[in-house]
Structures are given as structure tokens and as C-alpha cells.
Length: 446
Image (cartoon, rainbow, N blue to C red; front, side, top):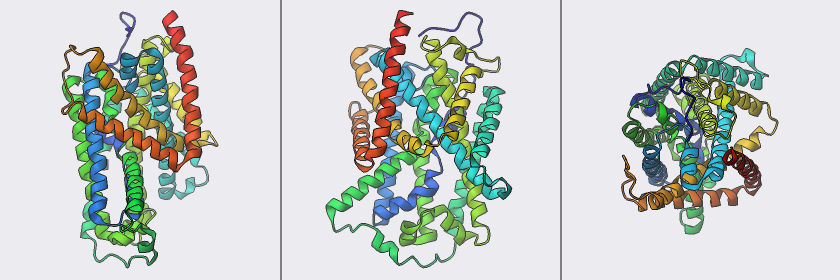
């Protein structure tokens, strides 16, 4: 890996474990947890099974965090999954993973900004009719905050993540304090699968698990800031594993609160469970309450993803695969050109008419980052067996093996469930592969 020119500003190692936890927590908690519980309850027909599905997703995230923790302590530098893939498989595969990772993050930023715009319109109806402009405005404001420097950006993430935790805990408590839930819709029971049919119930459970894994995505967010984290070998593994466990506990409590407020049939029939629960809690202000909570949640997601994307471009530039301009870092620790490029790409995605299809494809592509990391862990154990490892994944090879198999199953189920979107994702991946091959050859020649 190449280094910045002598005397040139570089990323500043000033972040602590508090930010690492806030990054992992903020990158994981999204609007999905306010929407997906109903879809999952509609697929499995008992409270214990609902709990087991969410626990399984949490354990999957925790085992994944343990596996990636070993990799990030071997290479505690900016770049995310690209760094692991390049070290294990060389420049071409590394670039493929890096391009895929950056694209998925950009699309996540665009989705979060559009979702934020929807919630802002609920709170400020005068802005209705211009969701893309509102979303672009949100991206502009968040990006401007990060141009002020990593201290401002990290402090903002810490504050928003704390606010998310408070808001969700408040929602949980309110659900448990609610009175008798409304009568369940008559169609709810008929909509759920019958557990007496083992094959159908197994298929429904796997479909529910796929949704749960999407809800847990983001537990790895702190790896992008390893180069800026003090004692990253200790802080990042603790942050990832701790955030995964904390998120699992929070998700279980949210589901328990929704079940208490709505009952199982009511939750299974609810397309927006948080909205239905809010109507029970606050009949005259449900929309505004859910919009306010959801806005805070998506701003946390947008904020951390806006910080993550430039670090990938910075790493690619430092290794000679992108123009060196993306390595430019301000005195306050902001990779300014990389941030500007990522923000412009996010705005372009927002303005794209095919955004919905692209974001659906990204929900498949993100798992390829997992696969690359778990395979890289096995490869590096074989290639560099004597290398000191500050953190060694417990239970090797079973721990990474379980999440590797789980990721493969996820991809297979996603392709089977939505072959059209899978074709879009495959086309995108092919484009990334061609670009990676061309740029890797140029980089080696250079």
C-alpha cells in the first residue's frame, strides 16, 4: 500500500471506541426495524419463532463481526472490505470488492436521503411534491457538516446514535405501557403460513431470515475508520461485536413491544407496524411521532454512510488505482475530494429514474462483501499462518464457516425469490469486474 506524500495531510487518528460503537450501531439501525417486524410475523406463526428468527440474525451478525475483527486488526487502514480482498486475492479482486462496496454505500445514502425526505414532508407538508429536491438538500447539509472535519462528523454521529437509542427505547416503553390492543384484523390469521406444513413453514422461515439479515446489515461500519481509531486492534473488534449484541437486544425488545401493543395477528397484518403501534399510543399524532423517530433513524444511517464512502475512494487513490486527488485530506481530517465525489454520486442516484430497481439490486450485492471477507479470512490463515494476529476469531474455522454458508444461502434465496433483480445485480457486478480488471492492470503497470 502506498503512502501519502511526505508532509501531506492524512487521515487523523483521533477516534475512540465510543465513535466505533456509534458507527456500528448507526450503520445497522435503519427504518427496516420499524417496517420489517410485520413482514416477518406474517411469515412465521408464533411468538417463539419470531424471537428465534431475530436471535438467529443477531448471532449471524455477531459471528460475522468476530470474523471481520481478525481481518481489520491485520490491516487497520481505511478502505473497508477492499483492503481485505486486495491483501488476500490481489488488486483485481480487491478493486471488484471495493467498487461493489462503494456503490452499495452510495445507494444506501440515496435511499436514506429519500426516506428522510418522506419523513420531513410529513413534518413539513409545504415541502410535498419535491422529494428528490428535499433529499438532495439533506445530502448537501450532511456533506457540508463533514467538510468541517472528522471531529465534527464523529461528534454528530455520536449524538445522532444516542438520540436513536433514546427514541427507540422510548417507543419500546410506550408500547409496553399501552392499554388493550385493538382487535386483530380477521384476515391476519389466514395470511400467515400454517406451521403444520413443514416444507412451507421452513420456506417461510428462510424468507423471514433473509429479511432479518437485511435489518442487521451495517454491523461492520467501524472498519472503515480503523486508520483513524486510537488502538484500533482493541477498539474496533469490541465495537463491532458489542454493537451486534446491543442491536440484537434492541430488536428483540422492539418486537416484544410491538407484539404487546398489536398482538401477533395485528403485527402480522401491519405493513407499517410502527405506525400502527403509534396509533394505539397516540391516536391524534401517530404520523408525526413515527415520522420524527424514523427521521432520526435514517439521518443516523445517512450520516455514517456519508463518512464511510470517501474512505474507500481514499484507499483506492492511495494504492494508485484512482487519481491521487482523492487522497487530498484537509487539515481537519476530511478527504474532501473523495467526499465531494461520493456526495455527487449520491445525488445522481437520487435523481435516477431507475433508483428503485438499483436499490433492490444493492440488497443482494451487499452480501458479496461478506462473502469476500469470510473467504479472505480462510485464505490469509493459509497464506500467512505465522503472522501475529492481535485478534483471533474464536471457534475458527467453524465461526467464519457458519457465516460463509449463511451468506451463500442468502444469495441463493435472493436470486430464487427475485430473479429479475438478480439479473440487474449480476449486470452491475459484471461492470465492476471489467472496470477492476482494466484499472488493476494499469495500476500494476504504474
